[in-house]
Length: 267
Length: 267
Image (tube, helix red, strand yellow):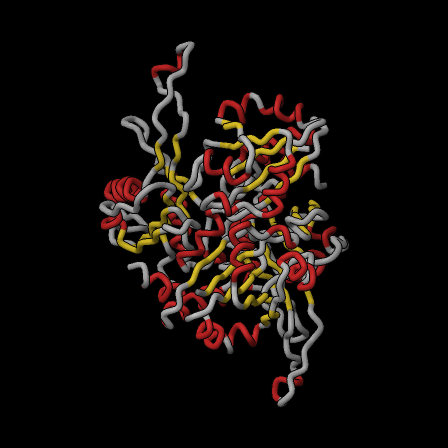
């Protein structure tokens, strides 16, 4: 059996009772370590679960998944994923491969930023399409997500912006070499996202979102030291919300009175 | 302290370890029983938690919440909510009142249909605005949600349709009487939702969604007997997906190959 288990968003205790029971009985448990992170590391999880975990990086999840699934044909194997296990395409693909290989699978859901973002008081059913903001490089500055934010905004919908995560990314120089070298992990902050958004706004003639548009910055959602701040995008460029993970929301122009009241406490 | 604790979607064991620890130490624990339901009832939860629960209906949550919060000023009080605790406006309002009354509060997140819907293989970041489909009566047949579905569809986004729940709704006749009488609980099925959608389509001259448009019906998401079916809306009118809760998704017209492959298994 192949189990995909969501760990939720905060620390070791955000796993469900069902998920914990499965972890304890499995023959092998992998910890997916590149699409997101918890506020605690592998050691804390191992201590809490009372068992060892195998770190699974992008290469393992994408290139060696068939070997893992083969093992799951007659053993119980679990892959732990931060948030909900089906937040990323990779995991849906794994389930499909499992089915093709005749391996049974089970999903154990948990909270993800896609629903926990409601902690800022903006109602989930008023969110439009979610966007991802990638890290820009010197030569690559995509901004297609901006149009989606404008689109949501014009239909009076909020936009959740997921911020880029770079974990175990090979350096450009090593891509052509035998031995891969990896960059330090990077997690885009609300501040960095705001800087990129303001740059896009400054380059447009009539942007749907302005520098003085309201934004909601969130960090470490679901943990005890979670932070939420409401500021203009311009101001958000100078705000430090502490350690990762961060997320950004661009609220709709006309808010429900309850949404307004709730946001007010984070100004 | 006032705790809002999400129970997830399936059974008693879908609570998080953090949530369970809080339930065990609280002075009083209320179970919210009108915005959603689990596949198990109050008895199973009480047995699993090893403590008694107080059922909280709409009246208690809306009219007597201040009394509950007053008690939370010097006691530990928890309110258990199916799914994630901030899925419904009511609960955001409670947190705001708590703050105004100087009562500390903590949210324990969990999976909700808003993220667990990804179990059908449609990617969460391709969903547009979520809609709610209400039960029609003889004289009240609102269809404003249809335009939102069309809007999402035209932007190549999926729509999650939350289906109506009527729990402890007073009968129309008793609204003017001293003693309220209540209707039997009703949970809209995928079948009933499809019937209403087809009626709307038949009354429009050029609807963005047709009777032969694809729909995804889901029931009891997150439980072991979860069911998913992919059919045209027309066919969906005759499909029985078993006990509640049900949800319906209208997928975008152009799907990612992985989404197509994943949906194929439910046809």
